[in-house]
Length: 244
Image (cartoon, rainbow, N blue to C red; front, side, top):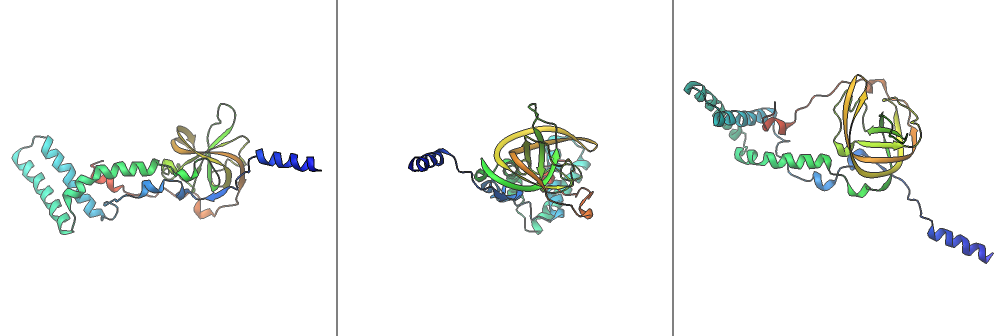
């Protein structure tokens, strides 16, 4: 009996204790430190953003192109009017113009940086699975997103909220509108893959890999959630950087 207990104790001593998977949400996946920066453009009204865009674009043209006197005066008047409007709204124009490139860098980092707390963690993550081509070794591959229609009817989520799923079995469903629960080991593993879905190809840029050992169906989805169109939106930083 003593020998048996000693043997069991020895086995337990060398056998790793499996951690209980932690239920997480997609909004926990970005690095919180990368999200903590000041973005003065988010609170600006659309009209103010358009005025700032006028200043940026027209001033660049005035500095780099040749115009006749009438055209130059007209463009300069538009710039001055936009500057006057911004000043009346209490905006520091030069400060905004100086901040736009630094904010662009910070925004990019906020979309790419992953939360170190979940690297190599055992997790449970609920979402909608977009099947992709299998890996060369035959493992099933897909992309887990938080909402119906992301990457198809709606824009793709930021790379640090798009999770590539690798599963040694067959997915329990290939229906884009059926919610699933995925358990497995999450790790930072950047991937950039183009897949075919619905009626075209979609580029999937992901910062996470989830090596799944269990995937279960979560039930039906309300019909009103299916087939919703893309929701339009304006990137204020793109506006002030002079993008078309």
